Image 1 (tube, rainbow, N blue to C red):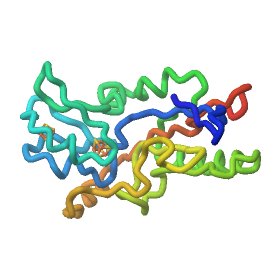
Image 2 (cartoon, protein in one colour):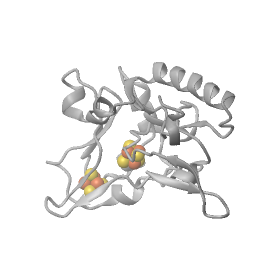
Image 3 (cartoon, helix red, strand yellow):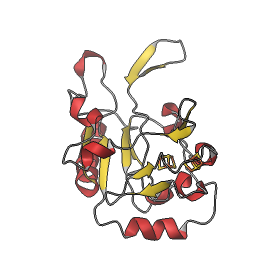
Image 4 (cartoon, helix red, strand yellow):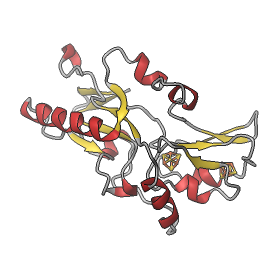
Length: 202
Ligand code: SF4
Ligand code: SF4
């Protein structure tokens, strides 16, 4: 959560942002991992096998979004898994389940992208000219993100890189793995804000 202010320091807008792993189609963390601890699931998500991770932290610096943390207790890397246990048991991630306004949604990526595009159109009609999707285009940066966002301003406002890039060049293997995923799911923060006075609820 953060407040956007104008030139005079007055609050213009509240913004909400979920700092989840984007489960990138071309994942820098996965490419950088020297042990094979990071793998892609049949859902298209990217996970870390804690039994294999040796704690080298290459993935921490390889992630363009800074979402990988190092757990000093376990000596391993850790991050959002889209609630791996839940999605493998027919449940959505806990964040999507808990969100009372359905601002975070879980489902098939293409379905969510369609809903999000309509939402952008609605918002623009209501005066939010900067409404835009981030990471929804499968032909976009990093092959599209499996967690994409509806923003009400430039990505930098939300601490997101304008054009996220892989720190490595070798994207081919990961791209092929991603294309081969039988089932690709997505998590869309469809309306990552709640305006004052309730305007803009999902
Ligand atoms: S957001 Fe970072 S940690 Fe998540 S898949 Fe992409 S590169 Fe890996
Ligand atoms: S910290 Fe673990 S998951 Fe990250 S790159 Fe090293 S071995 Fe792979």
